[in-house]
Length: 149
Image (cartoon, rainbow, N blue to C red; front, side, top):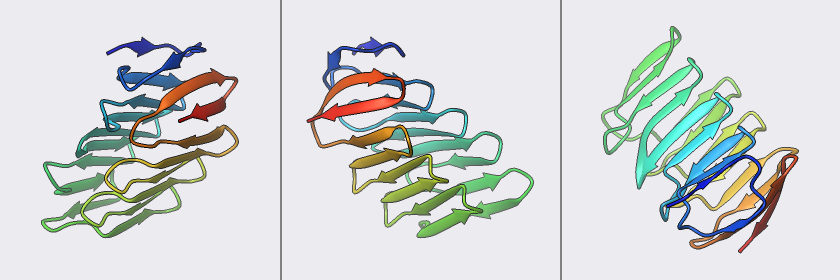
C-alpha cells in the first residue's frame, strides 16, 4: 500500500491503494476501486460492492450488500428491498444497477462503466481514464491524465 499526493509524477501499480487527482477524484484501488471522491460531489465506498455514497448533502446511500436505503436530503426517501435498476436525480447522477452499478453519470464530471469493476472514467475536460484489471498510472499534471496499461 502506498500514498500518492497531488503532485504525483511517478508511475504506480495496484500496490498503491490511494490516488488523488487534484481533488477531482480519489481512487483507492485494492484490485477494485474501493473509494472515490469527486470534489465533495460524491463519495463512493466500494468493497466489491458499494457500501456508501454521499453527494454533498444531496444524497446518501447506505448499502448493506445491496442498496437498501436511499436518502435525498429533504427531497425523497426510498426504501429498496429489491435492487435498484435505474435512478436519475435531476441531471446530477444516473445509476443503472443490474446487480451492480454498471453506469454512473454525474453531470458531465464523470462517467463510470462498471461491469463488476470500473472500466472507464471520463472527467470532461480533464482527461479519460481507462482502467483494465491491472493498470499502470502515469503522470497527473494540471488536470491532464495520461493513462497507460
